[in-house]
Image (cartoon, rainbow, N blue to C red; front, side):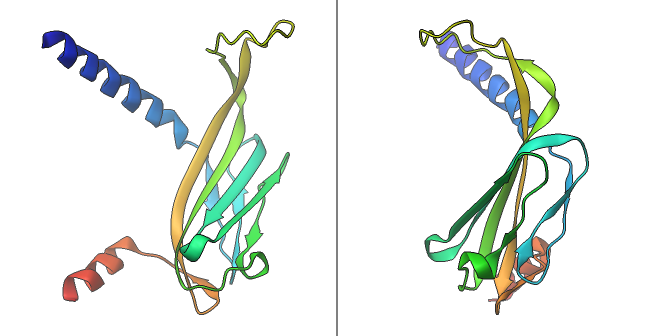
Length: 144
């Protein structure tokens, strides 16, 4: 029983330590009427922006050097609701590759660029992005 508890504790500790690095992309969102874009707050490369919304809506854009943007109207978003975004990029610092995969190729790199990300959500209503405030949303739910 003690071994199982220690194993679970080790898994939880490893999971919480790795979760700290994932959400450290420094960028400021700059939502337009129907466009989601970002101003990077550091030196990053290899950006990918993904947006998902109601009724199976998905859109994605990528760029090697600049933070990409997505215009929801042009991408086909017509449904009101909550949309989720994720912006990922590569930071300048290098981290060790832990994979020991032998794929038959010559020497694999021992380091790679660190992956960083940020995510969030917003409300799309009447064909445009409106500010989303979770506290206001909770008040509306309580009143019903």
